[in-house]
Length: 417
Image (cartoon, rainbow, N blue to C red; front, side):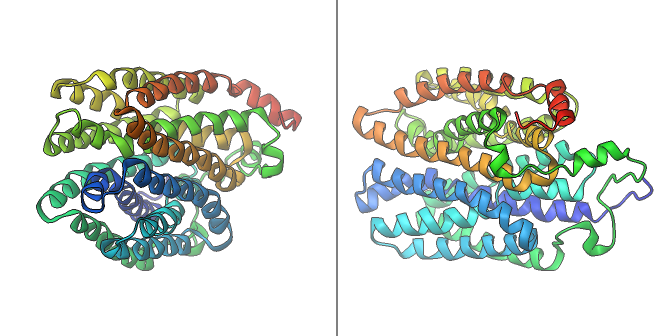
C-alpha cells in the first residue's frame, strides 16, 4: 500500500455507528414487553406478534435494501432507513392501541431498520475494500453486538427509573442525530472521490479480477443447492438469535428470579463477547474454510441453548452469556464470504439480501412462537430446546455447502450447481 490513510475508513466509521444504533433499536422489544403487558393488559403472544411482523419486515428490507443500494447507493439508503426508523419510533410513545404497535413497530420500524442492516454493511465492505473484507464484515457484525452492549443496559435502567417511553425516546433521538454524519461524510463508492478500494492492487491477476466481478442472477442462484443451504442455515441463525434470545431472554430471566439489573449485566457481557467473537470470526473467515467455521458456531450455539432452560443461578447465566455471546453474530462473516465466493461479489447485494431475508423470517417465526408457547405452556423451555436442535441441524447444513475446491470447479465449468 502506498497510502496509509484511506477514505474507506471514514465510510467504515459512519457505517459502524449506523449499524450500532440500528442494532440498539432492534433490542427495544425485550425491554418493553413486560411494561406493555402491565400498562395495557396485552398478552405476550399479541406483543410478540408485533415483534414478528417487525422481524419479517426487517428481513424483507434486506433484498429491498440490496436493490436500492445497487440503484441509488448506500448513502441515500442510509438516510431513508434512518428517517423511516425515527418516524416509526416517535409515535410509539403516545400509542394507546395494540394495532398501532403492530403498524409502527411492526412495519415502519421493521422496514426502516431492515434498510440499514447487514446487507448494507456487506455491500459497503465489498465496494470499498479489495483486501481484509472478512475483517471489515466482522467489524460491522461487532457493531450489532456493540448496539446491544451500549443500549440494553441503558434502556433497562432508564425504563426502570422513568418508564418505557423514556427508553423509546433515547433510541429515537439517537437515530435522528445520525442523519448528520451520514449527510456530511458518507460516500457511495471510491470512484466518487477519485480513488480505488482499499488494498487495490493493479497487478492483481486478470483471472482473479474476473472472479471478483462475477455476477449470478437471482433466478439462476435459486436453482442451486448451495443457495438454499446458505438460506436454510441462516434461517436457523435468525430463529436462534434475534427472534428467540433477542426478544425473549430478558422476560424469561425475569420470570426465573433474576433482577432487571442482573440480567442487563449479563446481556452487556453477552454483547461484549459478541464483539470479540464477531471480530475474531472476520479474521478467521479470511484464513480458514468458512463452512467449518459455520458448523462450529452453530454447534456451540445449539449446545449452549440446551442448558438455558435449566439455568437458575447468576453464575450459570454469566457462563451462558459468554459462550452464546461469542457466536451470536459470528455467523455473518463466513456466510457473506461463502455467498460471494459461490456466486460472485457483483451479485452479493441482491443474493445476500435474500439470504438475510431468510434469516429474519426465522427470527420472526421464533419471536411469535416464543410468546405463543409462553402463553400456553407457562414457560419457554420447549421453544429453547427446539432452537438447540435447530442449531445442530444448521451445523450439518453448513458442511453440505460446496467446498472451496468444488466452488473452483463450478466456476471453471460455469455450472449453476
